[in-house]
View 1 (tube, rainbow, N blue to C red):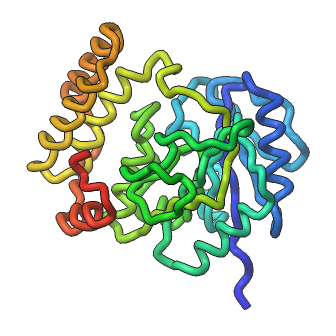
View 2: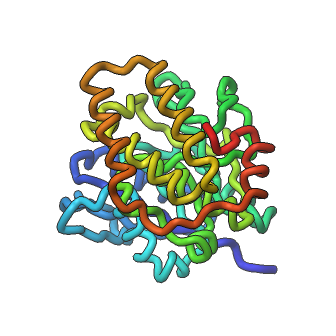
Length: 294
């Protein structure tokens, strides 16, 4: 019999939520099955006290969410090669169930082409899942598991072979859309992504706009995402649809100004290497219910 999949976990922190971080680490330690090795990355900050056996890396500057997670990946060897899959978990969440790691192992072992698993995020007090945390267009029923085209950045598991094959998260994104960039590259390489409602991360209900850089980076990174990954004819279609959706949502004047500033920045600054997805990948995304124009 083959040995169980080796799992690691990457957690980035700004050092400002020590109690929440400890609760998360305790929930990882309580997972059924073999021990999960954990790396906590202080993203431009010191790491609060952690239990024995938890490794830490302290960065002199904040590299953003994808940059910090990439450092955590490399702490497990090149592209995370020391383990078979990595859990990426927000430092203010926790795993309420003890079988999540075992369910991940079972899912990856059952399907060799499954590359990424997106967990369900639930409010710890109400148990509710925000619509934006269901990574598909038909998001009304968060309790329905399905194959999807993207995943949630702070509640997921990624097979390290995916990272080795398609590369890490796009560090220059800093915040927003880095998951979709990795998801599109993984799908283009033939990997699959599942949303699993039975794998839960408890996390307080929040609004993404709480981040001061939200509107600018969402717009800038969406342009970068399209320029990096879409066939040329789809780039203006995708960005035109999102421009229309943004206007229909009627953001405040300052928010709209920041959004347009980011949109211009996305066109005027380097987006990184361009590797447009194959047209058969466009068709795969369409069949999964999310064509890459929205």
